[in-house]
Amino acid sequence: MATYKVEWKRSAEKELRRLPKAVVPRIVAKGEELADDPYPPGSRKLYGASHTY
Image 1: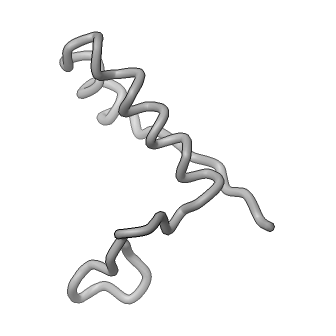
Image 2: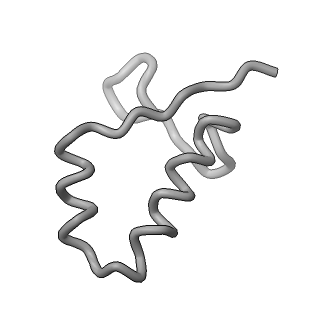
């Protein structure tokens, strides 16, 4: 199975710094999980986009 690499934009890192410290590890962990499963259950295609979920 193919694996992917999650890259965090600089703007996302800045926003994470503004959040309460208790929630940041959970958000980062969920984001990193996308490297193994980029289309987790419940993900839906965005309206008007051909390859964006």
